[in-house]
Image (cartoon, rainbow, N blue to C red; front, side):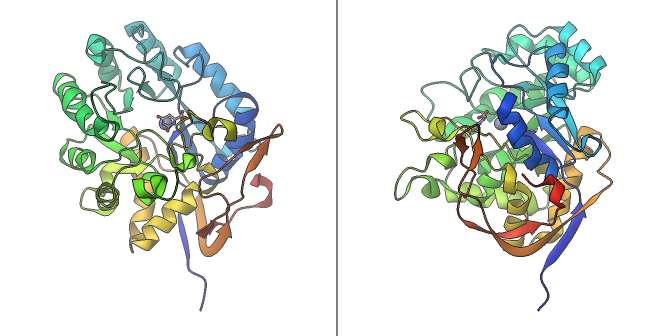
Length: 352
Ligand code: DOR
Ligand code: ZN
């Protein structure tokens, strides 16, 4: 029997953390091996909140890449309480594609995030006017709201009112995790779309908590019940599948920061992200929908052309390394030591 294979337009990663310095240098090749472009998250310390910092960061990213002509780092700015209309205008002139809304305290490095988004309505109006996107970490930070309900509550308290007040602002509801989010996206107008990660499509909270706490599955928004995972699978392959696209939210942290009494949120999936998306779509007999999800819906929503290369994957099992070493320290990838079903055929040069 011949090996199952699939060729698709080269994908993009519409939500990626690559950090900085030696971690950046170590992790970026995993993404450039698979992706044509990536939306770079701005949650460094200090955050990337002004145009010059974003351009400098872009420079550091691009100088860490060997084949610079085949990858594009699309930059975002971190929205803060101090973001001004002028910053939005400068961002537009500099080719920054989006602002990222982190509600203050919602996740890793969100200390400088927004305390009250409704105080930034004039800034959002300017973004609407100039066609800059708003990428949203959609969770409330109200301590009274259970962590498993924070996304659902965010829809009612923040997303619905924002959409009413700034109706033509292009919004990406990032890394959605719940049936409520899927249904909100499906019933929204074409100014709203969502990214979905491989880990939220693959795992439920039992995977993270039964038989011992598994810190490498801990991310925010937190992995939910099975019914939500099923809803995500339905969303990305269903009638409104064009509203969903790939955003890995690959978020590397050193092993000691994850395996700790107070472990960081973040799943490092960049080395196997495309392979996992392929496995997920294959398992539910929806390989015919893979390319739209990984390679077409995203650029369409961002108003960009699709990539002009193709990539090929073969169904051949591959054992994920136990760890990657950076300066004598380890980063543990998602599914470390385990077998995955698909492999991207790549050239030697781009291997880590
Ligand atoms: O799990 C997460 N990790 N969620 C986020 O929103 C941020 C990310 C990170 O930067 O580590
Ligand atoms: Zn993220």
